[in-house]
Length: 321
Image (cartoon, rainbow, N blue to C red; front, side, top):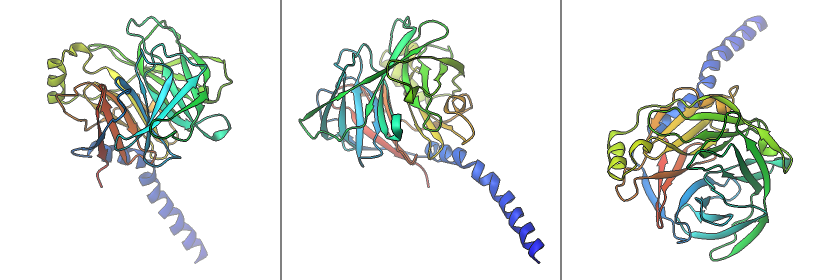
């Protein structure tokens, strides 16, 4: 009888195993079936006029971190998910050559850090880029400013200069992942900086090219709006990324769409971006045709996306049940 019970238990475990392995794929599919999004607010701080990166806090419920594109100082903004201003964090020891995306996750000592990717370069000739990190602070509060000290980690491409706007953190391995920005039919490159999120301050980490970003056809209406807005052959260019290790899902934002990737537990985040994604919904708004940022919730059950421009709407999509 005891032997029979052991056999039944083992059989049950084997039957359950495939379902557990497909959880990331199910989570990605649910995001892709999210349906119509809802505008949950508009960015209130007028200083956020070239929104480029978004990351949702795990420590502070309902708080987003945002940054501006090149031309701004080295700073990030705390924003409530309804768009309300929660203050500014100035990053001492950092320079904003061309900040793009933000990532948030475990850093040195295991506490959450913010990572600001100074990775942009419209001419595509930066072979060396910098990621600034600092321990996630408390939001300063509306109209207030906090100063933190940034720590720089330099990343070096193995194959010359690139332009890149997407920065993701592999919270399981500590790798930083960059996805390059290309035009027309060219394939975006996926690069990995091993363990760079916790590397000593001042380190230079060689980037490894993992492969080409897998893609899926975009939305025809969004593509048409992008064409009318003059985006032309950059309509499908990658502009941001976000990932949830808990849910096993990653998102990649382009000017006109969003793609969701399953991220299984035994697969690195960089490798997960090489597998075919599904297409997740993105706003179609002729006033804001240029999608620039996306923040996946820590539990992977919803995401918020926004375009650049003062007063940009924050549009939220919830995973299908």
